[in-house]
Amino acid sequence: MRMKEHIANTRTIVEYLDRHPAVEWVLYPEHEQHPSKDLAEKYLPKGAGAVVVFGIKGGRKAGAKLINNVKFWSHVANAGDAKSIIIHPASTTHQQLSAEDLKASGVTEDLIRLSVGIENVDDLIEDLEQAIQAATEAASDLSLYR
Image (tube, rainbow, N blue to C red; front, top):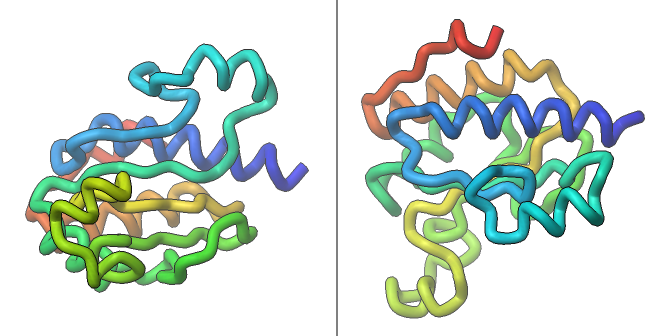
């Protein structure tokens, strides 16, 4: 039952991120551009879980600023909790790495990782929106998600 809510919230957030002008890319196994979308459909018929990553325009600086402006999301490194979690690895868990080492590890300077919880999805999106606006000055049309 819990996973149904995680997946439903994640799908809504992926749709939101996919349309946001400050988001460069979105990676989620159910997303059209994901290289393993066919495998996700085959092996994960009930949904691809609650972890999604995306790239924020403005790279490391914007990613760190986004993290510093979330209010509702928890800023911790773990994933898979009932509460929503956000992290910007380039300015936290991987901050000691150079740009080249980040790239070699598969972490880009613009990468934000979300572990989407079971809270109200409108609250999650509103918090992401205000944090993205603070980091990039770009806004999305929230009426598309209500």
